[in-house]
Image 1 (cartoon, helix red, strand yellow):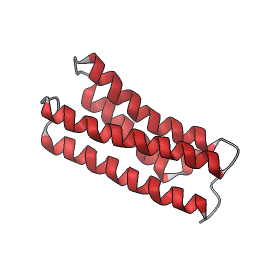
Image 2: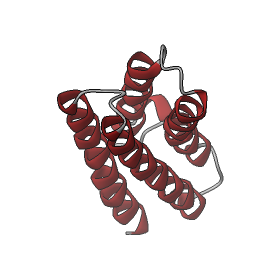
Image 3: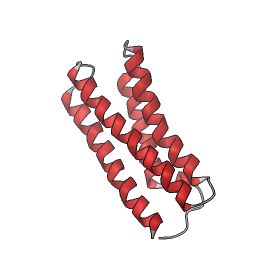
Image 4: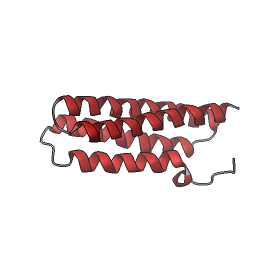
Length: 117
């Protein structure tokens, strides 16, 4: 793997950015402010932890931030179940977003393993 100089070059970050934009599209008009704020914060946490960890002093710290980002991805995935159950979003969209979250979580796991080696 070539050396990456900027967090913006990471596919993980690009995919999490896309997810945040989808969250905003999906819930920008949702009147449940508590729900909307929570899912938005969780999505933003994914992006922020990738960028913050990347800018830290080493792989060990970066791995820790990636673990937090992975957890936030799981939170977003779970919230799409809640959104579907409450009829805030239809099944097809919710399923697509959960699939995206799972792919992110899988990528985090692989990248964390890579950084350990």
